Image (cartoon, rainbow, N blue to C red):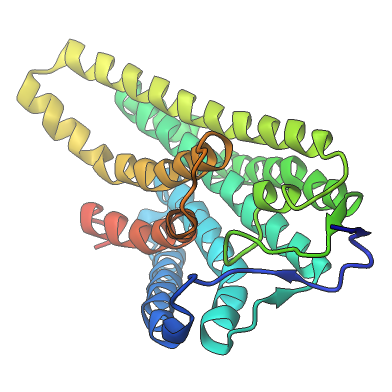
Length: 299
């Protein structure tokens, strides 16, 4: 099979659901509904936090950053998903693909960072509640938000540039309905060692966030158990349920998708598509529901 430089490749082809092309219109209905819930839910959270002075606190500022990340991922993937399922348009230009990949991975890294900072906020609330407000003052939260956004941009900025230097086969069929780094670099017929190494580095940064989140909750549990009974501990930890659920909803699909790409010998295309769509669709949909259900002030 001949290879072409990506500047000569006219289109990459994304995949819908193999074998169910005739039902793409019907499949687009729940997808559109999920996007609608995600956009309305996260926009509502941002509106409430902006307009309600009583919740102008660090916890809700971090929740606003999480909502921005969810909106960013939704808007990054929405156009191409709907083009496939509504119009059966599978093609996407290389530049558009690399741009979509940059925004999806950028907002994913930002979401991971926000979940880590939220776990730190919970830890300070349990460990040193009297100083929590002073340690996380509004100006510090703003600086942290700027640092998180800068970290996300810098980490994923090399992705489109390293992908552009590769050569690709003429048949450029993705295994997802959107562009992801690990999927794009596998289409290359030239040496993609740099992409593999740097992609692994970004994945390690995300897993480091998860490890630090686990450490924060270990310290929270240790702190609460040392000063309270089991019943009081459960009541105290109930305030963290929405964040714990958000961590699980975010990281489980990411880890599952990465494991399937790197370790599964006989990968089912349908399972990969399903997990990849969950990775993009489920957190933005579930986060507003979980935070609204478990946070009295938002409710």
